[in-house]
Image (cartoon, rainbow, N blue to C red; front, side, top):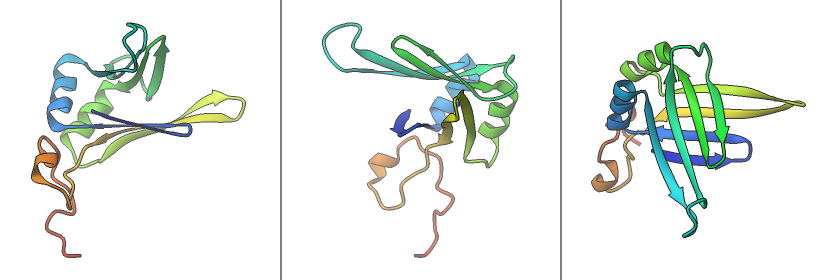
Length: 127
C-alpha cells in the first residue's frame, strides 16, 4: 500500500492482493518507523465498516485509518472504478480530501515495479 500526503489530502493506493486481503479480513495496514523509539511510528490503514454509509477517518496516536462502507468497497473492488473518493468536513471551512485507489501498472517502468498491480487502463495505447 502506498501513502501520499499532500496538503490536506491523503491518498492510498492498493494492490490487487491488498484489495483481496481487505475483503477477506476487513483491514489492511502498513507501518512506517521514523526512529528507534517505539512511539516513533505511523500506522496507516484501510478498514471496512458495515455501519458506515460514507467514507470516514479515524485518528489515534500513531495511527490513521480510512473507513470504507463495505458495500461500496465491494462494488469498487470488483468493478472498473479506479477509486473511492471523499471530502471530509473538518469544520471551520476546512476539509480533508481522501482517496483509496487501485494501484495500476506503470506504462514506462520496469516490469519489476509492476508486480502485483492492476492492469493499466491505457495498456496497449499508442502515444
